[in-house]
Amino acid sequence: MKAFSLTLFTDLGLAEPVIRAVTAESYTTPTPIQAQSIPIILEGHDLVGIAQTGTGKTAAFVLPILHRLVEQRTNPGARGCRTLILAPTRELATQIADAARVYGKFIRPSVAVVIGGAKPGPQARQMMPGVDLLVATPGRLLDHVSTGAIRLDGTEMIVLDEADQMLDLGFMPAIRKIMSMLPSRRQAVMFSATMPKPIRALAAEFLRNPREVSVSVESKPIDRIDQRVMLLSGEAKKDALVTLMKEPGVERAIVFTRTKHGADKVCRHLEAANIGASAIHGNKSQSQRERALDQFRQGRIKVLVATDIAARGIDVDGISHVVNFELPNIPESYVHRIGRTARAGTDGIAVSFVEPAELTYLRDIERLIGKQLIPGGAVPARGVVPPHLNRANNQGRNGGGGQNRSGGAPKTGHSRPQQRSHAAPARGRSEGNRSASRTG
Figure 1 (tube, rainbow, N blue to C red):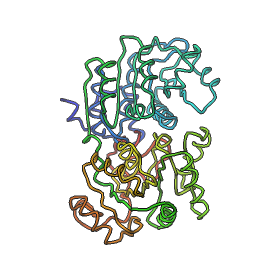
Figure 2 (figure 1 turned 90 degrees about the vertical axis):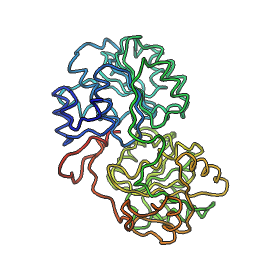
Figure 3 (figure 1 turned 90 degrees about the horizontal axis):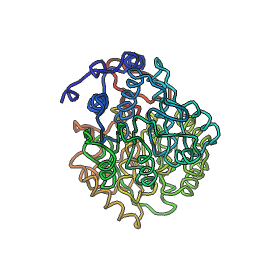
């Protein structure tokens, strides 16, 4: 297929204002998911894309959406939208909208964000004239549809981003209802990190002869993540976390818990140890979550403590460590969690604190990723790696261990990022070609 051999954004057939905006962001080379997906979407086909966070999937659908706006200038109609993008969380919805504004700087599309945790009145008012692009979470969108504040009968294109996470969050009934409200003649695009049977069934029901693209082995963590396990219980987890977070090799970390209450407790424990931390979860207001993310991006806090739901959409450079304070009970969530590190060509460390009651979860994760994670006994930090821990994980990583892929010693820091997020200003741009993989 032609799309597989493309190497530059200028080869993709995108409209000149879109190319100009991409170039202004110093991107020249599309990521694999972009090179494969953009031509298919431009041709008007429905698409299923299998891609994890950090592969550039946001730009893979935002750029062709903007191209359509250039090529076909039509009025969305009062309270309507030309393109609808559904996302599982507020943070991801906001970041998608930000990416659309950045890449649409020479097009100036009308963009609206409709999410929970924000006042519905202003959302309804911004929809009154209609918009080119509406980014929404399913629940809040249906609220507005039920009041007549939003109409979907003129929507030309629908994008379901991170469909597997919307499944995990129980949004499938809402998504089916939304899809049934759309015109029969519309283009549909779906992106998902994994493709469980319910997602396959959804695609079969609502997408017409979709093309499918995939950029990685399904559900497999990338090789650059050094995965480690520590057997700990109760207060020992808290003590080990404090020890790890105080290591100089820990530059920026996300700590995952299973519950909102657990996230708050861990955050308070870190703060009591004079470690800058903030918690984000569903009980936090949108302004609280945005403030915590801003502090994290700006380096004013070192640690973000999050639940799986709240963490969707977090796109922050330079996360050196991911810590599973508690293992997820859904194995796929482990893949999503640790994918927050080792992005944009860098290395990272994922540490899981496992107590006896969680060993079943650990076995499920190992089956999913096809790798045995052998516990070690010391608190690891990048650049301060206990030799016995490396030996233990060498056995479980088919010789990889804490070494780099050339067999050398563990790396002592991130390589320079070659991509960046649209949520924060770039620091230290690298020379040469860049790909827009930090937008999703």
